[in-house]
Length: 298
Length: 216
Image 1 (tube, rainbow over the protein chains, first blue to last red):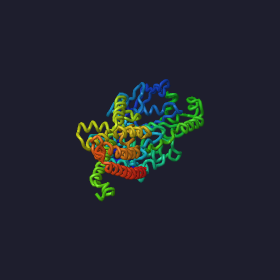
Image 2 (image 1 turned 90 degrees about the vertical axis):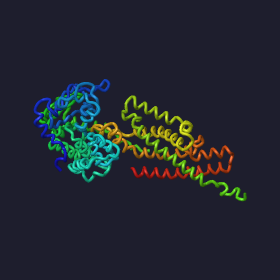
Image 3 (image 1 turned 90 degrees about the horizontal axis):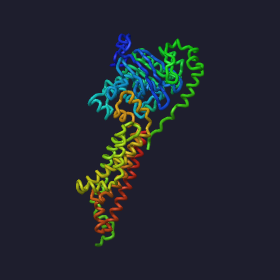
Image 4 (image 1 turned 120 degrees about the vertical axis):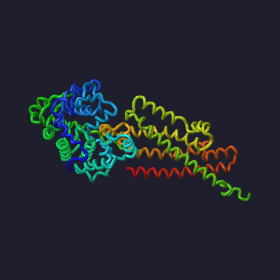
């Protein structure tokens, strides 16, 4: 357990630096907008996240939460607006610099997005690929040959979440909750400063959901990483997050501490009660859940 | 001439024909290896779902089309003219056609793969090539291997015919005996080719099913 060998002491670095605006590690969104044809998925979002914060982003289906996180990682290009990190313009990054930024802000997906036919250890080691340079990159590309230190790092990360004995199994043999924790291990191997979790528990049962959320909190508290997590359960957001950002139709309609998001406030913001909100989110997620990808076999 | 009509008379040059058949099988194997190798490299930029760019993607697709629309025998004629009579011309001709045919099948396999893992690798800062290697290749490897083995069966048949234009293998010998009207030899060689192709078809089919079974 404990710290992964070789992890940068991010928390210590960011605590003194994060005091002033625009300091190192500060994530800022300015007028961030994404349009899909005539619809506006994310509409002029302004947000500043100091390092080390655990932010829950809530909202109904189609509120733009996923698009927002995917834009921060640059998996989706913004139509307008800027993303700044420690004063650096992330929206302008290209090529190697862009890959460096993606390494710095690890993503965790609703569908885990592991390589199903690869073993768990290699899946975790994928978190290291952006660190490879020169002939080491060639070794990794051709033979998936990572160094002994990197393999030890991966095992330590798996051990931290109680998955060390699954290291040599194929990812597809694991349960959803285990796969999501493997995905979190992959994220940690990137040695990121930021973890973006897009509905990490939407496909999981309550017990596994709790394990994954505990793991995210652990990463936030022990490693000092900033965590942005999309959630559809207000209770989960209140329980785990320092700060809650509520979105509606692409706009931020609430931004405050979890205590400030009272049931009255929820009704004022969304026009429905908390129970209705939860039931609706649940139904939408069920309906939107994609069918399992067909195995490509001739 | 008391042996006339016997099996020994019919197959009197079995030793050299067996060697030519072996050469033909080798041509097919080498050509499949080269062609499938090239197809593997070209299939990723040719797949529509990996975003290989508005110039590269159509260019590679057209290249693959050009390679597979020209029949092997035409490539063989060109290569015989360029490199002279012999197996090299045949191997190159079949390899080129195989690259085109397999490239399309490989690309379609890739297009049928889910892109979840792709997003996972890209979001971790992986380059396009790294994402191809780690997110796509492990998922499509069994079907690609199966296509390549199937292509080996097809190439074996092509390799026995391609000798007609002087590109090596048993076909060259067949062409020779046909032009001399040696009817016993013609029937003997045809029978040998049929037997060899049947045998390799059966073997390759078994191998293919075992490979797919083992990889799943």
